Length: 520
Image (cartoon, rainbow, N blue to C red):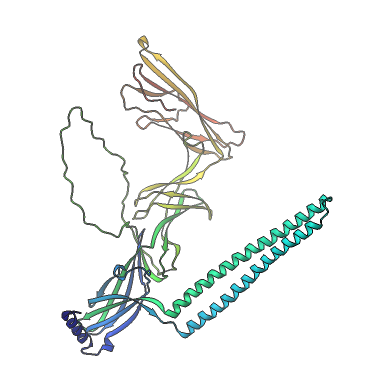
């Protein structure tokens, strides 16, 4: 120790013991985790204690209900300390062993003795089954030597008897071995706990030197980031019997994978994805250059999504303290709202021949909903699961309610032909004729939205159009290549007449133009 550090230590000791006496200025306080802020990946744990401090300096030891891994240096324990009502002059961390009481030692020894007896009893049962198996083998060889080989029925009966006995004894042996191994693991865990009791329960203590200008209340706060914790969102959607509304429950699945329980902690859930903040980088310069005549043109990336709504980060302050044991998870309700939920029956037979049931709902909250799994309920019964992408506040989102199996949809290409047209056969016409057949096998009428596609081209040399539509309800959107029908399917049954739509696609271009294959 240098002369300067020694002098500072003497001055600090004198400062602590001056005035009212060292006993009044030295405190030790149990300080478990009181607050948790959960992020999608990670958590901020806070130990907070309120106390009255005298004027001047005090030494306060906080016993933190936290455990660092044995190979974690205290220097990298990530604890940060804050004070209110006083100044923090110095802090340090140390591991200590809290001695066990005689009653705890006695109880541990008693549990060890009982567990040892159970292990010995289980081992005796295993030995008994092994002995039975050996006896059966000896008995089988003896009986096989005495059996009359001229009597095949006797040999068969002996074989079946020995096989049955061997199977029963082997099954019992495996069961007893499994039980023995489980008891051995319990005994090993008890022995480990007993050794901890004998050497003292490890504790993490923070020693704080603080100074107050006047006598009065103060707060001491220790904070630490936890990697082995987090939360995610889940949705539970219950469709009402009227078929036009739904109740949406936003749930939080919280997890505590640390080594300590959380007991009655105040909890806040944050949707912020990161806890590591960075300085905003400077803007890159925007340079406009003249392109050469034959240089390739820039392509605008239009993959970004446009949301109708706000995209606020959410901070959910739970109204009641939360208890969560280590290595456990639980679901908590954080929001519930009503929204419109009209069912839509949709078929896209080019992709899937089934009729899909879905509905468009709206996020009625003022904060975004993260990507989440969804549990679907109707009539008090869970009927399926789905998932949704991120939904901004006020935005709508689609939910699938499964399939309507008794609606059969079939798409087929009836004809494809290509002919030369025009003067001197200078043009080419390709015709594709399609049919979609829909059968409603249910005794209930419904409206089906049927969708298909139309080839599109950005070239002015290629002409594409739809001819001979069999249904006047066909909607054609040539810009997106979408065909749509709103079909009224009458109540049917097994013998119902199908609903049929047909159309023809014509593709015209010069015969000397080569194109990519026309999709069917």
